[in-house]
Image 1 (spheres, rainbow, N blue to C red):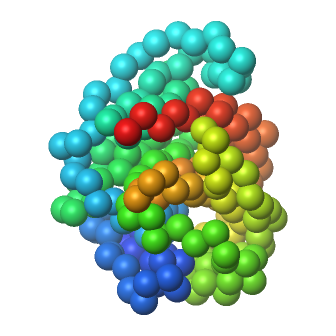
Image 2 (spheres, rainbow, N blue to C red; image 1 turned 60 degrees about the vertical axis):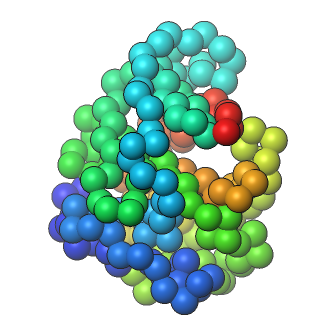
Length: 210
């Protein structure tokens, strides 16, 4: 998944649908991460440290060894062998998570922005038309309503091709008060079995604390 840095700038199409235009990311981001999920109103200074812990809860059965990420608004668990990195771009603050298979591109990332960024009324046709402006051979495999920590949420799963490799991206969005929270996981489609349970455990562990 060795994409060029400019590829992170290509996917502002989804929030452009809702607001007309979105903030472009810095050159350090690439296509793996849609920009409509990257507009964070808070600054990196608002993020707190990431603490290691061991969990045996039911929601963490696929993550026997976990780290815990938290800030003033949210906390969740993620695999202990993942590393994290905050986005350095001005006026954008989100956290990227990497594992040994993802290389220089994040396998998972979390961000937040204003509530209007999430549109619960978008259809699969809306998403496919917009995604196709930035991704090749888009196939939406799931668009459904769910909940995250008791809050209404959207789950979108789609496949696309880049450099003749098929990838799967799973996106979750929810709104808590005035804030839109977004969670994304991208991986080669042939690794789906490795990541689906991990992602389910991460989403199940989310608690909104702000």
